[in-house]
Every structure is written in structure tokens, then in C-alpha cells.
Length: 130
Image 1 (cartoon, rainbow, N blue to C red):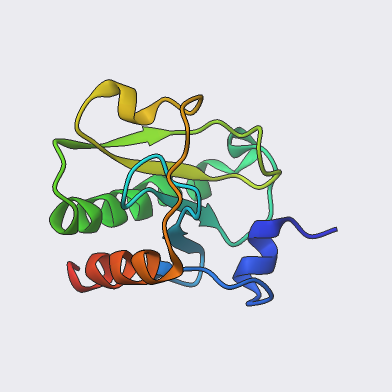
Image 2: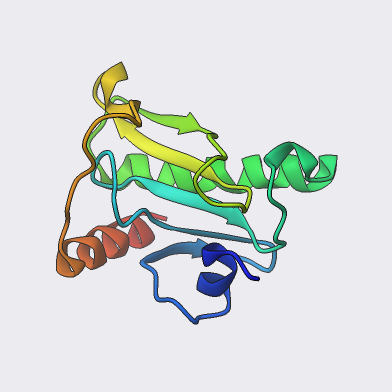
């Protein structure tokens, strides 16, 4: 059975896309820790990030760097935090979280509840910051 991320890649589930190429996709988390919290995924469905071949793992981080720089231009923050948890969805992914302080990347705290309009506006701002 395809992961929720594979279903997003195939367009079966909508997302607020930030960036995409032939190997990777970046989109906003719908339950973010901060405005601009994004997920970066390989289009190849692999459960565990460290099961990616070395070239794909490196390319995922290079693609994530590009997305992080876009987020940083669009969302006022001190840094972009990077997290790989890997427990919630069986598809390798990287979280990019705009940070003001270290607690902004605490995954145990309550998530934000943003409207579709807010998510769409944020995604557009990040895409335009390229």
C-alpha cells in the first residue's frame, strides 16, 4: 500500500507544494510546528532515510538546502531547523522548521491549526522567494 506521501506525489491527495524536481518534492506540513514548516521527500518510496542510497541521500539534503533558503527568505526566522524523525510516515522525509528558539522544533508540543488559505498563502510566498 502506498504511503500518504506517495499518494501526494501522484496527486491523489492535495498538498501545498513549495518545490519539485524529478526526484524530490517539498510541501508544507498541514499540522506545522511553525508557519513555513515544510516536508522534503524523495519521490522514491523508501521507509527509512538511511536506507536511501548514498547519492539519493546526498541529493535529498542538497534539495532541502535550496528549500530551506527559500523558506528563510519568505518567513522571518533566526534559522531553519532540520529534523528527521521517521516514525510517523513510512516514507523517508526531512522536516524544515523556521526557528526563533530551540523549542520551536519540539515535536511533542501542540501543532498549529492553519486554514487552507493561510497554508496556500505561505506556500506561494515561499515559492516566490526562489
